[in-house]
Amino acid sequence: MTSTSRAAIAACTLALASLAATAAAAQTGFEGVVTFASHSKSDGKTTTMIQTTKGSKLKIEGMSAEGGSMILDGDAHTMVMVEPAKKRYITITQADMDQMAAMMKPMAEKMKGMKHDDAKDGGKLDVSKTGRTETVAGTRCEIWHGTTVEDDGTKKEGDVCVAQGVGFAIYDMMVNNPMAVNARNSMQQRMAKYKELMSGGKGVLKITSIENGKPFVDMEATKIEKRSVSDGEFKPPADYTGTSMGAMLQQSAQQMQGLKQKMQDAQKGKQQTNP
Image (cartoon, rainbow, N blue to C red; front, side, top):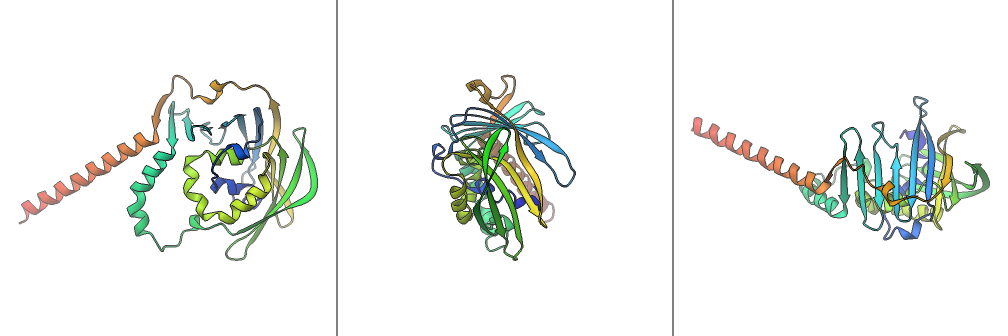
């Protein structure tokens, strides 16, 4: 995401670093498929993203150039990353993220006190109703204006069009994402504004950034298809190999331990050679 589009999504992207207690409070209640067009200001390219939702289940396709997808299950509180290039899928749970945090704790302790942009709240966010509406993909949505003021005083702004019961389920995507749990504590002000914007089961249909008074559409819904969705649409292909983040972390820890042992053995050998 470019810096110019950051403010455009300001009114809705705080969900990208927010978690709430349950998914049910923010589900749009929509069952079906929504197709989005994502436009890049830097190279002029347009990519397609497809969102499939049913109850507490959500699947996002087209979020990477490799054609991977992400499947979230609000009841199980799991995320599955599907990687077609490797014909595999990785299941991630909150327990996995807790394990990762524990493994990285020594490093985090060493880095305490250092300045990190990722730990910032990202500047102060304000959102407000404009009183304007628009029809996107045949659905009426209301336009909210969002502004962020960065720590250095830089101001960015943009509009987001939200609709009742349909749209990009940003909240659902993140509320059930175990990888986002560590971000919410640094985003309290944004979380409150997000709740103000997206309460009542609303979804995002269009995001527009504004730079030097000129609007640029970053993302917009192009097709909304209300239909029954089978549970099978939220499962990885049967011929893919499955693994878990926990297993990958365990393998990584074993490799690190093996490397540490080799270094210790090498040091002992050097001491014996040069008494």
